[in-house]
Image (cartoon, rainbow, N blue to C red; front, side):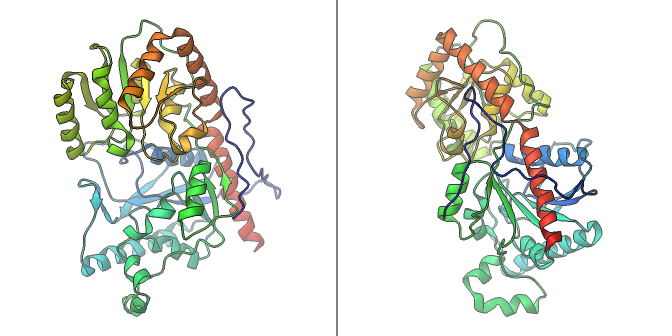
Length: 435
């Protein structure tokens, strides 16, 4: 496949906000567009930054006059309160994942039928009540993929937004379609039950990728291909994290990590680096952590003699997270897997916090060593500690990467991201109208 990927803008190097294929609304301003958004999780009951990105885009769609309804899983985080929001959300779908155990659900045939029937009936009811003009599908991980198939059957224009490569990896976790994908001869069972059994084709769907790495992975590993997909880099929400100057005052060795606390994010390497930093260094781990990982990390910190220097916490709001960035001396983004994009470094850059990172995967498309961050080798605690020490001890380096980070965050914004996605959704609707 030949793909004409544009280069994402980088800090301080002639960054441009132009998209790969600018599309104007040549037929004049469209009336209010009704957008049905489907995603596996949605704030405030979410685990990562990509769900927050979806929220940011949908809120901007509403600000532009569109009518949006979000349909998502019924998972809820205990103690999290729903706050007033401009976008209505229906948390009614039953997923195929146990979020508390952090493992796919193992269910028998009867339960599969029950959940799948519930999901298909729910979508059909929402379609009848809301009557969307266009569907915005963000992530079907651990969801019923027949939702997209039903959209295709109804000929509803669909836009796929890939903030990671879920389309290449997640279909086998759908416990319903997996039955029939592996045993096509069993489809009459589904028909007898009055249920859709087929995976979607995604033919005719518009698509965007947040990084070239995501596009390359989907092209190589996914059964679904998107040769016309557009590169639309994700951006930081500067309404929540205004681009600002670095914190003033002496370096105090406050090391911050933000994100899911899981091994492939490099958190274990980060804890192993702590004994290699001065005794006053304190590590704050902010994000969702399963009890298993918490106990493992506590045991590791105890073994290394740094248990009193590690704190686990969660951000209770975007304002709370902003304050945590502002109080930190350095943000470490130690990811060890091919990170699809990585919104956390951009948030830190906007807040004037120097960034130390690995630059794996799509994050390497905007992280530039010595320009807007300091990079180190993944999985190497000595290299991580050395990078943090460099930032602490070299005032000129710290000044340069925070300035470069501010420049990057000023270009890679949520507004820019939402603007282009808004055009793509309206373009999909226009193309459908033309037949």
